[in-house]
Length: 362
Ligand SMILES: Cc1ncc(COP(=O)(O)O)c(C=O)c1O
Image 1 (cartoon, rainbow, N blue to C red):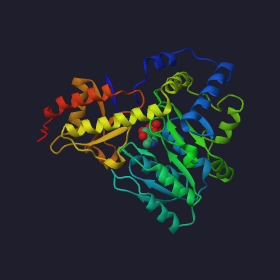
Image 2 (cartoon, rainbow, N blue to C red):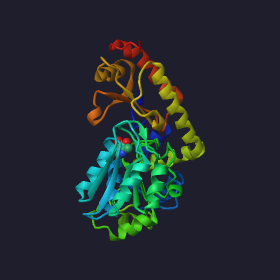
Image 3 (tube, rainbow, N blue to C red):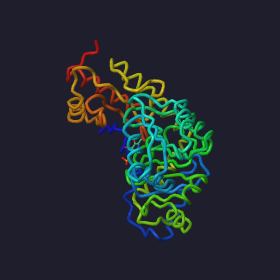
Image 4 (cartoon, rainbow, N blue to C red):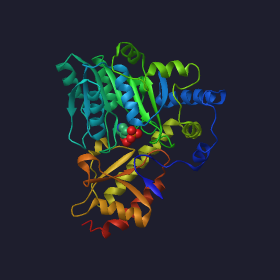
């Protein structure tokens, strides 16, 4: 099977085997060693000296962790949304009582740092900016470095959803001054779902000291005090820790910059391949993502029928569109344990399947 969705992503067989090891005491010395090693290694991939915590939750839990640990009900925040996951960040902040100002963009477009500057200049009461780095629903990567520059000029807190970018697309946490960064294990990390990783800057800790939003499971004070003892506050997904321990080994061997280069190369290969089939990209190509490619469903083609045919007859799993993009796009994931051959195989299937659902390139 060729699983080409933007998460969960394929897991190398060695990592799957490692994940199947017997359970150990999560409050014992062996787990302490794994937790210490994995946390230290993750900092290298986050490119940070900040605290990093590993939570047993999905990416959404990591986003919630960012919100509830740094904000109080009534705080005004600016949410930059270019798609479904930006909307989700806004929904989480609203659910916990933040006053949300929105900077919304047409789906398929990236955010413009100049708009962020205008929004922050217009409202000095804004305390934090929430932004999606790589919008998986539209296949767009925001210019995070430039957005972060603006947020730093205004000295606001910057909370980043890097769920589908970190580990595959550069996220230079310390160089760019990112205060809270959230990612999830099932994306570029070559392990199954269940773990989320977050980094917390000194500025975020200062905000945390005053933050009044209700929290319990996701309280980073608990995460920090347990980590000092080599533990997590609550029972962790031990099996995924085993896998991550090995996956990080493999990633270190490949090298961070090589991993970025591989994703850039495969991203471009995917976009070129899609266009050569006569299909159109959904994203503004200047900001097209190197981890997921969104493709317009051609006129007269039933996107669902295409997905079903690919799955049933060719063992290729692609993703559909989310929310208002249902039926309008399909998406090809190319992050983590992926090679150019995997994408080539997917493109070859599309070339065969598309005419069968009524598509002709000309
Ligand atoms: C950009 C982005 N943010 C957040 C999430 C939510 O992560 P999860 O589904 O693991 O809760 C995802 C994953 O689907 C994502 O791609």
